[in-house]
Structures are given as C-alpha cells and as structure tokens.
Figure 1 (cartoon, rainbow over the protein chains, first blue to last red):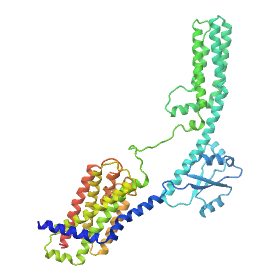
Figure 2 (figure 1 turned 180 degrees about the horizontal axis):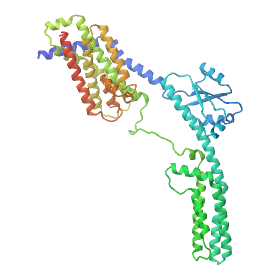
Figure 3 (figure 1 turned 120 degrees about the vertical axis):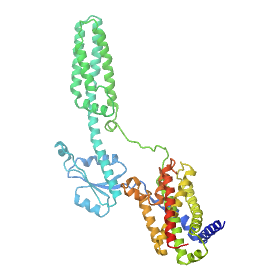
Length: 457
Length: 36
C-alpha cells in the first residue's frame, strides 16, 4: 500500500512537472507535425526534369530527328537545345544553366558498322549520390528509347517488305484454286500451269522474306510463341505445292487443302503488318503494383517511422533528464532518507512518463492517420501494442542514460546521440535491408528500430 | 501496423526483452550510484 502510494506520487509529480509547461507540450506534439507537414508539402517525389543540352557533331543527321527524339524520350529529360561545341556546353553546365550535357557520338553509323557500340557521353554536375543514381537511370532509359527508335525503323522496313510479297501469296492461293478446278474438270495441262505459277509466286515470296522472317522469329520466340515462322511456312507450302502429282486422283483435294493453308498464311502476314513498329520492338512493358493493393504515398511511408522515432526521443529525454535532475538538486538524498526504494522511484517515473507518452503517441498516430491520411490497414490493437512496447523500451534506455550521465548537459548529449543513431539506423530513412550484416544487428540497439518495422512490413 | 500485415510475434518478444534488460541495467547501475 505504501509502495503503491509512493509510485503514484512519483507518477503524479512527473506528469504535473510536464503539464505545468504548456509550451513544452505544444512543441512536443505540434512541432513534429509542422516539420512533417512542411516536408510533405515541399518534397517532390518526382524530381524536376533534367534540362539537357545536346552536343552534335557538325552536319550530324541526328539534328533533323531531334524534335522526334525529344518527344519520345520521356519526362525525366527536357531537351533545351543543341550546340556544336563541347567546351561551350560544359561551361553552361558549370554555370548551372543546364543539368546535363549529352555528347552524341561523332560518327555513330561507322562505329556501329565496325561492330562497336557508339557511346553517348552524359556530363553532369551533381555530387548527391541519389541524384547521380537518378541521372544514370534517366540517361540509360533515354538511350534505350533511342535504341528502340532505331529498331522501330528496322521493323517498319521489314513490314514494308512484307507488303512486297503480300501480293505473291494471294497469287499462289488463287493458282491453287485454279489447279483444283482444272483437275476436277480433267484439264491436266491447265492444272500443271497453275501449279508452276503457284510455285513461282511462293519462291519469290521466300526469297524476299529474308530479314522479315528472322525479325518475326525473334519477336515470336521472345514472346514465348513456338509457332512455325513465316519463312518456314512459306518454304514448306512451296514444297507441298511442288510435290502434288497431277495424275494422282487425290491431287484435287490436296490442291484445295493448300489453297486453305495459303489463305491462313496470308492472314498471318496481314496480321504482322498491322502491328505497329513501336509494339513490335517493345512487345513488353512493365507495370508494378503493390500486392496489398493500397497505394502508399511518400508521407504515408515515412510517417509510422516518424511516430516511433519521435515517441522514443520524447520519453527517453524525459526519463534521462528527470533522474539526473533529481540527483543534481539533491532530491535523491531526501528519497534515501524517505525511505524510497529504487524500485518505487523507477516505477513511479515509468508510470508518469508512460501516461504522458501514451497521450503523445495517441495524438501523433491520430494526426498521422486522420490528418495525413496514412492508411490504417492493420489492427489498432497491434499498433497500440507495438507503440507501447517501443515506449517502454525507450524509457528503459532513458534510465540507462540517466545512470551513465553525471550532469544535465551529458544527459542531453547522450539523448541526442541516441536520436542521431535512431535516425540513421532505425530504418526510418534508410531501409534496414540496405545495412550490412553485423551493422544491422547493432541497429536494433535503438528501440524505435523495431517500432516502425512491424509497423511497415 | 499502419500499412498492412500484423507485426510478427518475434519482433514483439524481442522488444519485450529489451524492456526487461534495459530496466535491469538501469536499476543496478542507479543503485550503485545510490540514487534512491
């Protein structure tokens, strides 16, 4: 009974001490949100487009296709102009007028003909590692786009050539029809003439196929289709037409069947020609989606971590400072005479700060969920359990700091160190999976490290 | 908690152990410094 009243007395004292300072409470609860809100309002998830200057060698053929390239290249890069001189372009980059200078290869066509890849050099002026990674990705994706434009041209040529022999297949098909009719009417000479006409047309088509057939084969195989290629089909059709013996009684039926097969082939070529070159060279595009189906905006991703880190810092600092205060004001001497046992002293302080911490945690969570719209997909009970344990662990760490510190200043410094450690290692900013084994385990020394993790995963 | 799956029991157990150990250290250390 006496122990309980001592504990409650300490708890009440700590709470009153904090509540007597309304400014402190306001800063504790409002401060973090002003910062978080400002960050949310001001942070641009998609960086502004990179202003890009292209250096083209004299008389480059690329100059004429620049508008087309600019249109295709995506929103990460904004082409602001072209120059003929690398030195001048780099000076403008150093002056901060542009973000990127892209140097087109001097004689790309010759380089490629010599079986070498032509290098597009991208100059930038950024030191931030994230910016650099972004520029690398943006440059690669722009060059990929350029490569696709070249391929699309190849595909368009292949389609045009498919048009040239598009005539040949219907001719062969009609000839097979004529042959079947002639055979049924007993006109063997007419049938042979039609047959040789069909073979001629198919041979012509086969010769012209070349590039187109290979191209189609590549697309089909990559897309997982195992259908016989156009080239093979034209070739085998020609073989079959040739092998029809007009004196065979079944020849008319075979000729009719070939007529049907050639009609199918005709449809396949028409289909190939109807696909746009852009789709042919880029048959796949990626579309990523979250398994949970809940979209998580930037603020929503960071806010659970912020709640845990703030909660840890607030209660840890309170706990550390209050114990050191009692010691420096000499109150501990009184407690010893009291007599107040250490267990009662710690339990009282724990209770007082746990109540205050719960209010802070509830307020932070409420603002995060209801004001910032962080989706609450889990259960409130688990959320409360995780936050309560994070808070208890932070208080424990706060008391350890109090034991280690001799003065207020030391306690404040230790608390700040704990906060700094937490910001780097709690997984709030940098995901824990990015930390090396060994360091990741050290990261768990911070109570909030576990807090946001069950929160987010 | 906010964004999806429930926290795993292991994480909560480790957090609980953290509380016990930190309070244990603080208690023994503060007693040696004769705080109360």
